[in-house]
Image (cartoon, rainbow, N blue to C red; front, side, top):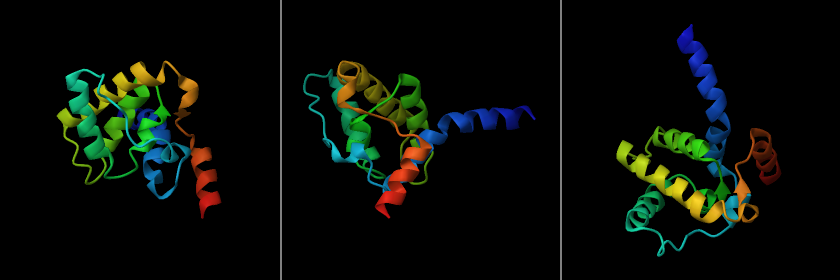
Length: 135
């Protein structure tokens, strides 16, 4: 019973992130934004993590999507964990950690300083509305 309750609690937290991730057949507003970041002023370890992020995340969706989305650190952590467990993601635990650390760093250095320039993650209803408008 406790496992079932824990599963439902976790599922309710990751459901919006899961739907955003599953919406690769939908063009989100974030997808239309810039598809790369100038990380030349970021520390070397973040520049390296950006390359891992770019390589791994582009397999399933545009890189513009996470680049132009703002989330809390906890949301980024849930999002990356969910992406790691997608079939064929090829994201190892260490790569997932690098990607999360990059996204959290980028959130703090770029997005938190000008949040109105970025999109918040979309709700289930917003994604479904976009899907119905595009099909």
